[in-house]
Length: 83
Image 1 (cartoon, rainbow, N blue to C red):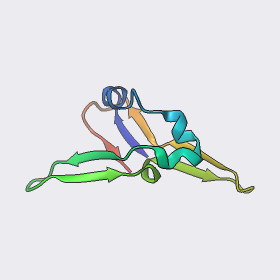
Image 2 (cartoon, helix red, strand yellow):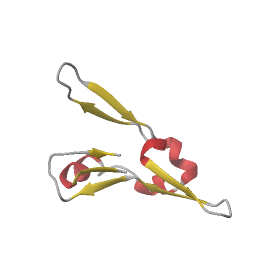
Image 3 (cartoon, helix red, strand yellow):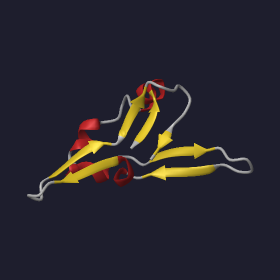
């Protein structure tokens, strides 16, 4: 699960088609999400593919359900939690 500050979420995901994330068969058509992680000596480009930020559940009957694994965080205004 990834949490981003609410203002960032509203800005970056305003054009994001969350319904597409919920259709497992369309997951591969979602964009890669890039985060630039600032380091002490150099920056690191962290790339999340759809399989990294869409959570896919499969029930005992083999039916799959997908949900977007990125949520707004109201607790902090400057941190991103990637888990």
